[in-house]
Image (cartoon, rainbow, N blue to C red):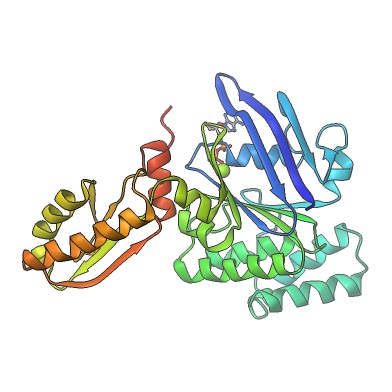
Length: 324
Ligand SMILES: Nc1ncnc2c1ncn2[C@@H]1O[C@H](COP(=O)(O)OP(=O)(O)O)[C@@H](O)[C@H]1O
Ligand SMILES: [Mg+2]
């Protein structure tokens, strides 16, 4: 296995704030690696250090074996970054931007035009390509940013919160783009606050909080680490939810979550429960619900979601800011 990124004990301090506080990461090449953490966790700082834009205060970081400080030029030649630093010019059209950036990268005019047109087409921006960027929607703008970052196919692409603020349809378009980029052999380090995004795209995930990795593994490993699983129920009748909640908390001896959907509720089984034990409890639960006259429409016993993982690891929801 080739390693794309390896950091050990990485520290970056801003005044009193330890934005990175001993960050250890190992990112295998050829996949999407998810760095998941709430606002202020240190994601952008980590990306900037790895992309050689910021100097760490302590620790080491290597990208494809090259040190990000001593060998910064070599690192820069292999990485590209999309994120909160927009490189595109609002007054130019999408196509003009890509040609200009291509020329800056040393492409000949014809080559720059062709590459730009191919990327616009691949990202569904052919028509928009003729318009000034300031007329773009958030989703179109984000796609253009990503297109700009892969004019030269990088070995490693940093996508820093590529879908923050996008509507669901645009998010899906960006996800498809990320999958296509990885299929062409680029390693992607994707930061996100969205657990479902990491779930959709990443092979491995590091959960970071306060500048440190608090959990790492494949999605399955992360989910397994917080327990045997979770029970999800949908009822026929929302009026029966309080009764269902009472039965769940009695039979499972676990806190019950009422979902936004008024007929849905769920409970996470405690980490001590084995897989068999979980199935037994689920059986008992269905019996008790039937006895209580609660009509269950759908029932599932599944692995916990990444949201539940984050909550279990940090005692706070993933969308909440890091306390100061
Ligand atoms: N240039 C800076 N000056 C001062 N504080 C900073 C700077 N950049 C980041 N920070 C602080 O470091 C912490 C981590 O920030 P950041 O890496 O941007 O987090 P994330 O990208 O996960 O939201 C935050 O508390 C942030 O306020
Ligand atoms: Mg950030």
